[in-house]
Length: 274
Image 1 (cartoon, rainbow, N blue to C red):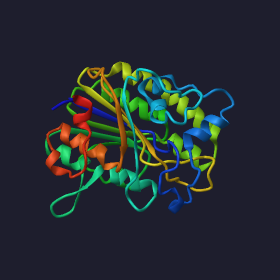
Image 2: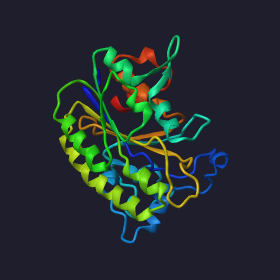
Image 3: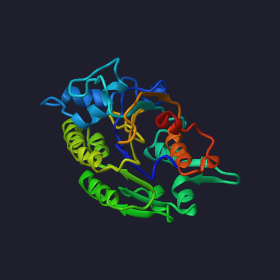
C-alpha cells in the first residue's frame, strides 16, 4: 500500500476548456476556468491551486491568477470523459464504476468489502445515496463539504474519502461567473488547510466529474477536467498528461489498496510513487 488514506475533492463544474468531442455536446468554445477568470471583477486569486499545479495543466493558455509555476507541489494533468453521454452523473459513474465479472461494480462498494473505510459527502445524487456500504453525508455547500473533510482528516482509518463540492454547479446553472469565481477562491482558501493537515502517507486528488461553464447556454459542458495529485511524501512531481477516461482515478485508488485486479483501466499510481 503506497498511501494509507486517499482524499478526493471533486470540484464538480470546473472545466479547463473544450474537449475534442465538444461539438457533439453543443460545447464548442466552452472554457469554464477561462471564462470565470475573464469575468472576475478582481483578479482571480487561487494561490493554493496555483502552487499545486493548476496553471501548469494549461501552460499553453495561462490565465491571470492561475499562471504556471516553476516547481509545482503536485502532479498535474487533464481528464477526458470517455462515455458517450454528458449528464452530471455520467462522469461520476465513469470515475467510480468498473466492469466486474458478472456486473458493473463500484469502487465505493469494493473497498468496504475488502475492509477499508469509505466516506462519501455531496449534494443529493441518487448514485451516491445508493452506496450503502459507505458512510454517507448529504450537504448543500462547499463550506459543509470542507467541514466534513476536516473531520475525516482527524480520523486514522485507512481508506477513501470522496467529497463533491456543490457550489460550482449552482453557479454554472445560473450562469453566474462571479459566484463561480467567489466559490473557487473560497475553496482555494479551505484547500490550504487540507494540504497542511495531510499526513506524510496521505494522497490528495483534486479533480472534477463534469464542467458547467457559466458563459455557455449548455449545461453541463463537455470539457477537459482537472487532475492534481499531491502527497507530502512525494516532493518530485511531473505532468500526468491527458487521461483518456475518468476511470483512471478509480483504478488508481483500487491499485493503492491492493485491489488492482478489480479494474481494467489505467492506474497512474506508479507514476506518482516512483
